[in-house]
Structures are given as structure tokens and as C-alpha cells.
Image (cartoon, rainbow, N blue to C red; front, side, top):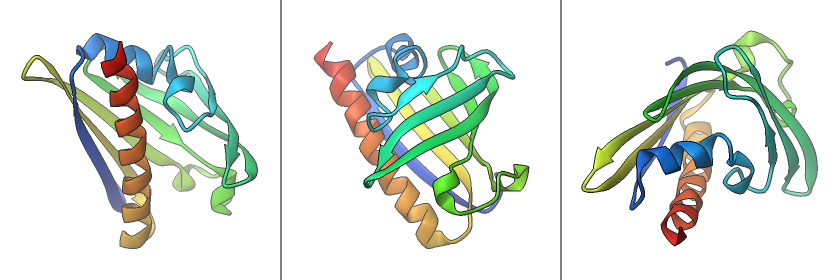
Length: 140
């Protein structure tokens, strides 16, 4: 992974298949209210649309790897970053799901952060997302 890496992780009392479904087919339930569009096949686009801190956004990326229900790698670019839409301005996000005590341990790493502060900020946001994912999954 390049640049500073943001990392969030969470144990969830639900099977990996359910977590995988929330990260893909039901992604709009867990990505901060954004509408998420993709077929989640390798090479396919991913589009996130919504509002963040009062600003509308349309982020984009691609599915790089998909190994259900254990590993998902996508790229992510946000115009709200102020950076140009160029490959070097895309983050690489890797989700790892593993069995943990009858549930699932979820790890999310996002590379390409320009500073440690940016990585820490991203990690805090992703931790909130994983906490919300756990709440949804555990409510059944």
C-alpha cells in the first residue's frame, strides 16, 4: 500500500457472508447514507452518490479484487478531495473478513493518504462505518 495507511477493524457477531452482502449488494445501508452502485465484479465501476458535510458528491472507483466472502479490494476517488481525477489520486481500499469466535473480524485499510493526520481522519471515519455495519448486521 502507498502513502499513509488508514486502518479500522471490528469484530461483528454475524457470518462473513452477511458482512459481504452489506459491503456489496446492500452497500447503501452502510456507506454514510450514500447510494452505491456496482455489480461488484472485478473491473466494474463503483459509484457513491450522496451528501457529505452539506456538500453533494459523486465518488468513483473500480473493483480490483473480489474473493467472496473474505476479501474485497476497490479503488476510490473523491472530487471533494480537491485533487485531479488521476490514477495517483485514487485510494486503494482493502476489506478483509475472517472468522472470529463464531462471528467475523473485519479489517479495512485505505492507502494513499498524503499525511498521517489524513490517515488518522480517514481511519476514524471508517471506524464509524464499521461500527454502523456491525449494528446493522447484529440487529439481523
